Length: 207
Image (tube, helix red, strand yellow):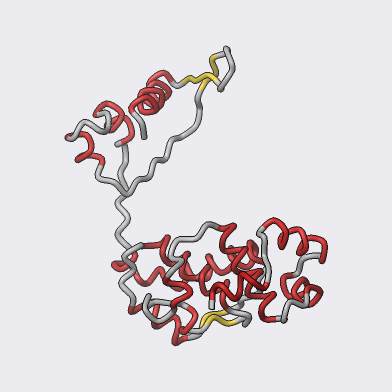
C-alpha cells in the first residue's frame, strides 16, 4: 500500500467520513474495517514503509491464522468449498476427490498456503474430464507433471482457456460435443475459441 493511500485510509478511520471519487460531498463512514495481510506490519513500521499511526488504528483485535501446514484438519472442508466454487466457475461437475488424493493433500507441506490449495484444485479440474479428482492430476510433486509445472500461477481466464482447449482436444475438436461437456451454447463456445485464439496448433505447441 502506497504512503499516499495509507494517509487516505488513516483519515477515513480517524474522521469516519469520506468523499466518493469525483464527488464533492462528504459522506459518513459506518463500515466496520477488517484488514488482512501476509506481511509483518511491525517490521514494515520499523523500516518506515508503513505508517505507525495507521498500524495502531488497525490493530484493535488481531487474529493470527496459522499456515495451512499447521492446520491440516481444515483441508477436507476447504477442498469441498473450492470444488463447489470451481464447478460453478468452470462449468464442471466434480463431485469428489479420492481418498488417495486427499491423503496426498494431508501429507503435503503447502508452502503457498490456502491459495496454493485452490490453485492445485483448479489445475486438476482443468486437466480432468472425470467427476472425481485423482491423485495423479493434483501435481503435488512439481516434477511429475510437465504441463502443470510450467503453469504454476494461472489467472482464471488462463485456466478457462486451458480447460476449453483440453475439452476440444478430448472430443477431437467436435465443437457440438465440446459445448455439451462444457454446458455452454455452441455460439458461446465459438466466441470463446475466437477470444482465446484457440486452434489445433495450440495443442501441438504443448506436446
